Length: 560
Image (tube, rainbow, N blue to C red; front, side, top):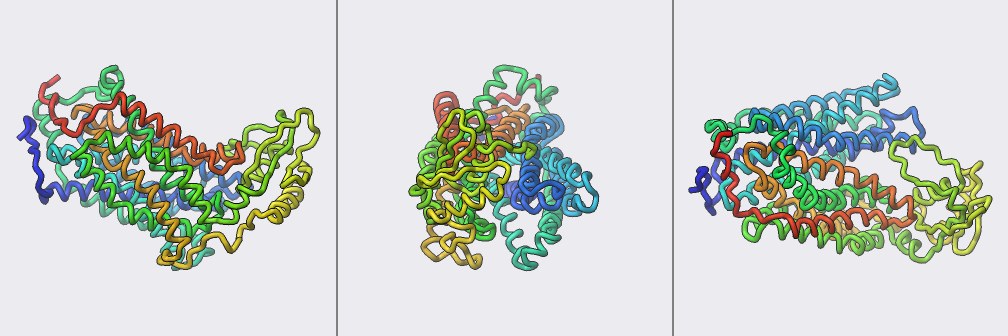
């Protein structure tokens, strides 16, 4: 028996512990489900709430509203982390789940901009901010709550069940969307049935809230309160004292940043890469990823269990390094299977943009408000949207921009971008680039159409990406909880976690695609997660201590 009364044992979970893990994890699954519904439906939501803008601009605004939920997550971590360390874990994440449930239900009811005009996108963004705020308070509370119920020596295994929730929430959102689309058809889904998944989530969150109400407070928090050892100013103590703030910074850069980019690359960017770059239809790409997620989910628990034996640090950092080494060959192989003609064209068709460098500005346009006017920018934007690999050939002082396809020069007329672009794309098609409906692009005819070499190979490659996710994420909750004392644990875990995942990870698709568009290389965006993952591996190796044998109750017995 430890000093805090948490025995180290090797047997199975008790009934109470199973209920704690189930209730905390179930609520978190549904919160992630809510959060990812918006990402999966971003294009439809763009049509519903931003239809007063051109299509390209409305898609950017939809993605901006999606990103708003990520940006505000650290604020949720600050607000709810402080409450959780002052009032308790249980009631704090009950409040968070109520906010998520209510805001999700309102999204399902909210009329589009055709009905209430500009109020629709404003209310939508406000609801996204509330969802991000709630999610910022959820994870730290759930991780802390489960960990403080777990016996020493089994904390990695117990908290690993929580680590499945983000992936299971994404999987659940994909499955509900696919089922609804199959039942009502694409047109009805786009018109009104996209709201049904939001109503489903409200019912699920209400059930989870009812289950959580039956739980008691964390035993570690109860003991701390009984001894008068709680913190009166958890934010100041956690981040205003260098001894604690230093640990939070090391956790951010030495564990969480790398985990975040591996998580979002292996799941979100993989889906984006299939759809936006390789031109795979939404149904097929979602089903491929859903199978990979279903096959990989159990490995969160496996690596959590393994971390109780060999340590958290080697598994997380090995996952970062393996992912960084594998991304380039893995995504190239995904291209060759998903869109063979595009993969071949990238290697065989030589495309150049010959222009005055002064006319070639940055293509990063996250809010969709920039209007491209120069022929160089318009030409590159057109090529990037068609997933064409190109290089820029500087021609200082050139009056016109020329797109060169296998040595054939075609001037790009900025006064007639649509007509000029169509002529260039016809030349690209003649040279070997596929059309949008090319028969070689992978297409699935149903949920179980995965036994062909093309689809099975893609599921296998996506599974490998998910496996890296399970390595970096499975042991993470235990590692974070063990770094901080009980009195400031909720706050200290939440803020670095949500900065890392909300900013390093959540903004990854936009950053990576901007890198692709700017360089004309469909693989160039992978350098962002590769560099961040390697940075985390180096910092973590040098500065992060191994914590698997740490007693998380030590240091919490003295009143302050």
